[in-house]
Length: 339
Image (cartoon, rainbow, N blue to C red):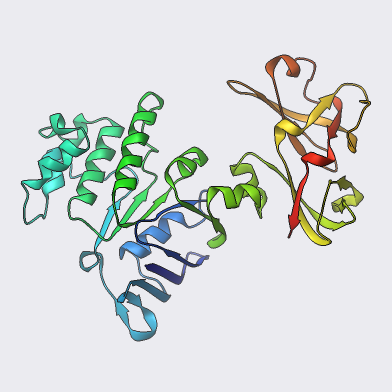
């Protein structure tokens, strides 16, 4: 078990996080830019110190500020892939992987494992972003570390190659038995690669759990948006959730007391005139943004209850930014849970 409980401050920013990663577990760390994701990896790797706290790998104390213990990176069994790979520019891919190894002949086996043995003699300047990341991953794995840390492993890879590189990274992560942590800003990567997701906000752990845990009960607007959901917060009683500004949302079932509620954007219907029928939640509000995508169009509606709807391209043709529309949501589509 890798246990992390650290606090540090730099240039007015405070990082204060506590979590655990099991052996053979893949933890994805997501959060806005500047939320502390990279700082967290560097502390675990031993590259940056923590002001207070502990980093424990099973019974081994990598860091314990109360006991005056801080093991530098070279004394920790860590493989670290930073953003941009940071390969030695004057060395070949093979030499980069084998650098510092007692058995450098194993370096070629790692390049073969990742499908890039033909690049053994290439220098970093001759590699694409994806190829360089795979070389960096091979270098990090070659010493069989107990902890593997990856910082935005797919960020520098072009769209055409991202899917194939993601499959390779996923295979490597899933075939290892280390404690594995990777940082990403891409929800698709987090869902595709992680067993659990740790959400960071302003240097704190905002939420942690499986993808299904987060999808079922998001506890912040950031998490809801990450998973493509609308999130509302209010006080519930008798199937009615009182929101801010006096608005209400009717659900088929609610807990009593402070509550969150989620609605999938595809469950939000928009009309140019007041709809008839069974929806329990109907209100009028202005369209604030329309964003086309490959299969659906996201339409953002403002007003006292901001909400996002996803409609077909055909269905979006009748709406324009600035127009007032009628919003309708069935009570059965509102999923409420305690806040």
